[in-house]
Length: 364
Image (cartoon, rainbow, N blue to C red; front, side):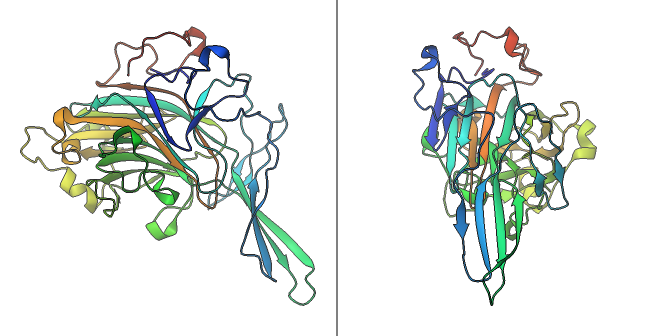
């Protein structure tokens, strides 16, 4: 259990991942191996990124400004998920969090727990996440004849996304896959990945608005692409709010989630009994509403991790940015090798007021 990440014992940081906080790191946690720059809650515009300048248009990328503390700005999403106005939530406290990527172009990072977890008989995990400081891309259109600025059009929308992943790649806790639209998990199989994607890559059939989907890569061969199993579901993610995500894998087909089931042809090989003495289970993904899943599917997880001793895999997070970018943070996390986490009082909410940040016991 990590109610926050003032203590990172048991975690391995890869790539651009680090911890970050709003205040200087206290001496009690200064032993942490990877700590990034402290971040104020009121953000300023960063250096602009310019792409493809020519006589007709200049496209720039910059960090979108958040309003001053106390200002309650309006958020609006259009049909394509563009943030016309963006406001990060201004909180009175800012505990140390995992920062998987800073708000810069072409970043990728991963954080893995060093202790393998057993997943074949069911598991439950939940975490709180936040996407903030998204990029703003602007196109300034000029008159061809006189090179006079005609108008400037801007879009606020970060990229690319964050994943919760289970993997058994030969690189172990040093695993970091390809970035960009693959979100740090490209070529990092065998793996089961829940993608929280904030950028629509139409060339891989992503929907344009923010969305959640499940990906599988059944091989450690880096040339074998991952495949989406089931249709993605739309869910607002890159709005500056803190979102709670819960993922459950249960034995048997959970018929109570039938209305939320998604499937496609890539799922078919994973809903067959392969003779291992294990039947098909159910994977369910919840976002904010922890009573009804956003999506669910029948799944034989043993078909992904066949040959893995005791079904032990590594659990963790990855994220990446591309041309568009944002900060992808994980604020708290628990993982249980059973459903319901009876040994934990934090399986539904993470109450920081009841937690000793410096205690040594951890469920994971």
